[in-house]
Length: 223
Ligand code: DX5
Ligand code: ZN
Image (cartoon, rainbow, N blue to C red; front, side):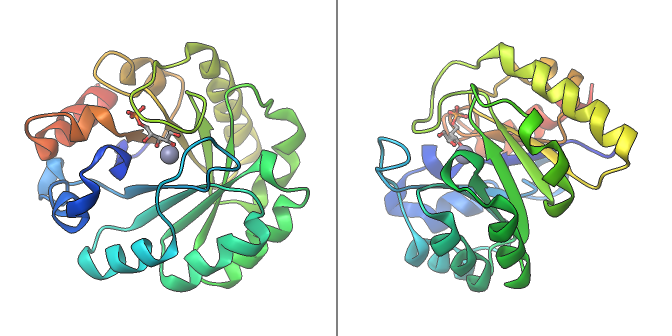
């Protein structure tokens, strides 16, 4: 496959300095992040509150890194398309939050972004296999969504292996992302399971040199 992608999550960044924190992973060469992962939480779908559209609009002005918006919110049919209209590169919403994920994906794509589907650790993949053609990314949660700095749940790797097989057999164009507890101790097993893009919050922004941490994670995933 192609080089592993790294998407640092600004959930672990200093929220008073988001522009500078985005730049901290915008280095060059192998230390450059592919996407900046932006965790949107509404205190309803998950028990935490982070940021919303106005902050994303400001980030879009502050950095050139494509924004990978992860919407942990209720009613994505209403709230997801505006992130696409604003200029987010990828807009991911949760399968558990809507009865009609295909309609939401269609609206996100019509508004000019890639569409992503996310599933929580306990959500099975099977009910969604037949709609994956309507999506550009699948985000497998490897912690319960809501907070950074949690422990990786290795049981989700079975879903990663299953989707990798399905993608290959059906010849799908779908990037598989994993999110939660990705660090130097866990990224290799996720890479082995067939993940394309690795979200890392605390492992990047908790490091003394966030840019170097991006490069080190990518090298580990490629090994
Ligand atoms: C959790 C968020 C993650 C979080 C990951 O709900 O979706 O993106 O920032 O943080 P770490 O890498 O610290 O587990
Ligand atoms: Zn996330």
